[in-house]
Amino acid sequence: MALLEVRNLVKVYPLGESVFGGGAKGEVRAVDDVSLTIEVGETLGIIGESGSGKSTLGRLILRLIEPTSGEITFEGRDLLAAGHSQLRDLRRDMQIIFQDPFGSLDPRMRVAEVIEEPLVIHRYSDAEPIVSQRTRQGRGTRVRVAELLKAVGLDESAMQRFPHEFSGGQRQRIVIARALALRPKFIVADEPVSALDVSVGAQIVNLLAQLQREFGLTYLFISHSMPVVRYLATRIAVMHRGKIVEMGSVQEITENPRHAYTQSLLQATPEIVA
Ligand SMILES: Nc1ncnc2c1ncn2[C@@H]1O[C@H](COP(=O)(O)OP(=O)(O)OP(=O)(O)O)[C@@H](O)[C@H]1O
Ligand SMILES: [Mg+2]
Image (cartoon, rainbow, N blue to C red; front, side, top):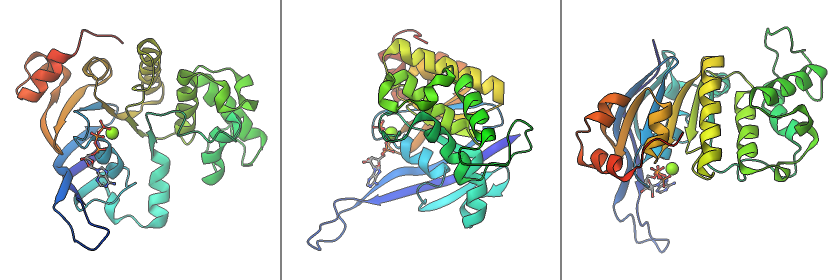
């Protein structure tokens, strides 16, 4: 079953617009007529060089930015037609993890506050028996935060500490715990391990794979590293200048790359690291 469907998605940015009123000097087609489907429980890997449009695509799909044209449906619902309250509901189901675990964590907030924030904002009151109806500092929220920390391999004692007290890999675990707080169905991971050492990155990739099995998650996994994508993805889409130039199973793409750009990517990457 398709969780997400994207049809003819386009995002155009004006280029070189002069602040002195010189007018637009052309445009960048950051995402240029992209269509794709992501099935429930799969990982679609998006690979491509810097500036090929990967992040723009990820943000469009979560409606963090508005497309120039195209269609996006999530569980059959038209995402672009969704109003405020519908979007708010949809946002529980869709989360994003960014590359930089420093930039995405507020240094003044304790880990417990970081993770409970989405629970508080969305007045978390799932049917789960473990969670109470209370929100801020409520016992149910505490229990849920502890549960989330455990899920990402961190100790409960992390709650009272601050992000800077943790290593890059641990901070990314905190970010992941927060992303999981509302039990999302779909996660866009935008180069989540690019800022980390290879061995630490491999641990995070393994964690994401484990969480996917545990919680039945569906991923859009953005990376410029073929070994990482190959390890985690079920299918791979290769982007080049805003377009998907090739898409197929991991086996198809790695064993029989058709596009010259995909071939160069495969030649450029050493064997599996994860
Ligand atoms: N807000 C913006 N305004 C203008 N141009 C933009 C904006 N965001 C992205 N672009 C342009 O769109 C293109 C695609 O950018 P994008 O960030 O999606 O690429 P990317 O594949 O994620 O690159 P990277 O691997 O470096 O993260 C680039 O040419 C970029 O300069
Ligand atoms: Mg990017």
